[in-house]
Amino acid sequence: MTVTWTSLHRLLGVAPGPLTYEMFEQAAGEQLAETGDLDWKQTLPFKLEKAHAEKEKEELCKDVAAMANSGGGLIAYGIAADGQSGRAQKVMPVTMDEKAQLQIRSLAAARIRPIVGGLQLVPLPAPGDPANGVLAVHVPASPSAPHALEGQDVLRFPYRYGPQTVWMREQELERAYGDRFDRRAADHERLAKIIDELTSRLDSGVGAWVVGVAHPRVPRTGLVPDTPRGEIISIIDRAREVSNELIPRGGFFRYGFLDAVEHEALNPRRGLRRWVVRRASPSGPSDQSQGVHVEIHHDGTAVLAAQLNWNAPSDDTALVISELIESAAADLVALTASTARARYIDSPLAVRLDLVQDIDGALPYQAATAYGPLGTPRNTPLPIDGTWRVHRFTPIETEVSATADKSALEEAARDLATDAMHQFGAESIRLLRARPAGGQAS
Image (cartoon, rainbow, N blue to C red; front, side, top):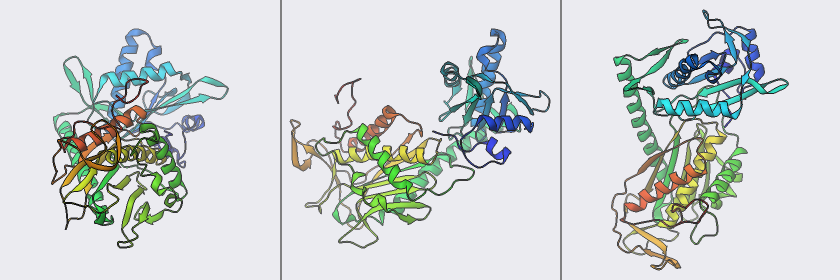
């Protein structure tokens, strides 16, 4: 994911865009001073003598944890600075090979608790020297703060105090943990509010809906332009590709909810700080959606609502078809990842999945499947043997990394679907079952 807005952009007064080697040359030419979110380092800790290297390794982890605890920032290796003023003096290219980058990531992961998610390393080669240059370490603001340096039988919590890195005292640590708990509560309330507001816009006359929403735990700062209308189709197309990797198309009752709004995505409707892609209800009010409802918010929030039954309930239950829950979970995490990538989100995203229906005529939820007892597909989904009805579904919440790979996304989708179906007493799911390495679903 490209880093497009940092403290260096702000201090140099340049527009959002990728970091460049020339920006650091400009910083040295202007003798830019270190700040709370900008730190100059002349050498990598792995190139020093052993006695000095250990101290520098601890300093690296201390700086990463401190910036994560203080709203994020940028650490630049390859910049000589004045020891007294902290002002950049000269660019001194360092090795930027994959080994050096892996060492930094491994060191931070081994010594910082909890791990700082979203850490990005940006190698910027010097002109004419692709092997050496400036290695920029972008530390995002962390929703998991406070982070500690793990030592022998001790945890120490650093933070930035201006250009200095200092240790938290008891009252500062208390406030940091209080802020973490407040953020978690705010995330919970925000996700629930988005789903609650959306429910009234869904055609609930044909049964239950599964609704999922993903919201960045740390909002983007700086200049954040609105998502261009023409970018929505690209976000959805990319999400469809990712979802297809999680659950390949062609499986029986593998439904692509994002496929259902392929044409609507060409002309999204404008909403409050968001774009809306929906299929209008042909029988209900014109402001209600039928089948599928997708939202891409300018702040990186992604919303997917999918109808779980194409026909009005024929008995006293609202069917929750397992294969549709799995399909929706795959589409949701894929849409989350695609939106985060397009909106340059680097923080983890809080995800919530819920079942909703018409409040006035709410029916118990009943787990169903499109497969028979022997695993043979059938055209009419029927209740799963041995499961029970659920009168009040418990919303499921999890977290997805903005930089999650296929394996992590598949695990997130599987956890969402499994937690949903376990509430009915269903033993397993079919489409997202764990796969052995290089094999088929077990």
